[in-house]
Length: 431
Length: 156
Image 1 (cartoon, each protein chain N blue to C red):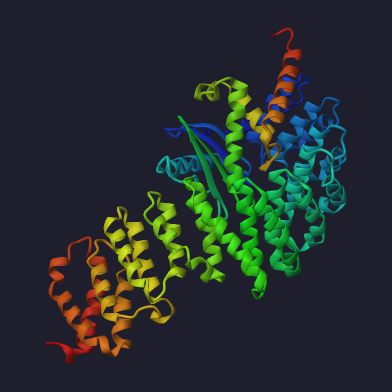
Image 2 (cartoon, rainbow over the protein chains, first blue to last red; image 1 turned 120 degrees about the vertical axis):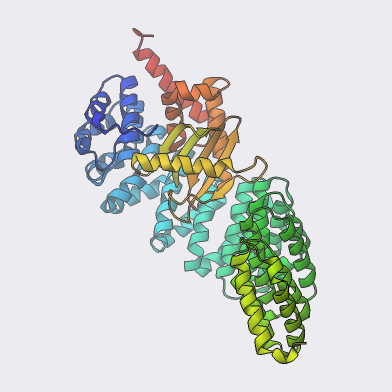
């Protein structure tokens, strides 16, 4: 733990592991789990010892061996012990069954050929009477399915049944997350899921479950090709619930709510529009991660009417912003918002040019080239604006020596280049 | 899956380090230091989720942490775990420690490092969550403690 290598003690650790007293055995396995790895030469000596412990009458000996093994299993160990662990999955004690099921995942990772024979038994465990074993089986199958979703689509009906019957939140969360990963592959599954998920959203009091349900509903709605009328109700429900999350005083819930909203934004921007005021409020939050998330959301919220107001708010933030990364982020965002969809939302280009000039006066920005590119773009494409642009640019060039200091030089250079170019190209407007 | 569980104090000294994937010792220490620096910068009233930490691998991983008095409990998890669920799990782990040690404090973690590991082994195994019910965990720990005591009648 403190960073000192103890591989020289590997053989001694094995000796302790083979002690008959539980106390010592436990200590041996703990040391092994912290230090053994695939490169440890003596690890093959442990195979027989582990096999003995796995078939020991004392459940705690077996338990400690399973736990230790999960940390240092190698392909050889996995191959040799897979059968023993498979038999343990049907042990009388649920404590052992639980551990055996969980360790099968590690065994599968190291020795993939063991998956085929073990799979039927693993499926059986999904219906095990003990909830702990059931949840372990769900855990393992969900992990396997994330790696390779196609092979597990056939299990979807079984999971569906579990989802509607289980009350254990952890199991529900895992299954719902799994469905979220499966829906892109099977749109019909998505359609069937909407109803039970909406029921869960209405009935649950656990925030974690609510959040996962909302997330999966969003994933389902994104994968369904076109929005049918009843789906807009689901979107509205999600947005409503997310609003509750964002309004909560708990920062974590706010963060997650904003994260999920941005997923909805990509496909259903209109639904998010009505919550503009809330998002703008989040911009004022003390927490930087929340501010960054709110910034991401603003993208979909602008319209011709509110663009100027939003940018004005962002500019006040730019003045207040302490760290330069946040400030740069704001700057890129302002430019992104203004220039999106071919300047669709800008009604007054003169105002935009003056904003760009104001942004130039910022200290130490890394995005000088962005501002420069924007100025050039607008000046070239909007003929009517050229006179105003040129007057602004010449003013900028005149005051350049006042603005330039060593920190600003990097950002300012690009802009001055653009300013000079504009003045030269449209010199007919120069006084 | 949980990639790593780290517990360190306000000065960055590791009190519990458990990796569920093999890293050489120097890299392990580097990860602990890097995580400490990331987590130290966070104020107490902002959210408990962090993305970052290049060493611990990939954009799929998040750091979920909780700060209790002098200790930071940090779980490095991938996207298959529910963030709020893991926050709850950290709480369950700390409450279990409290129950097993009676008003746990940092000194307990320093002097009874093995016991802390045994408790953690009942909660998370091989990077996956084994048990989330505190009473169940405590029952198993106490049963094992009784077994140890009965073996050591001579030494007890």
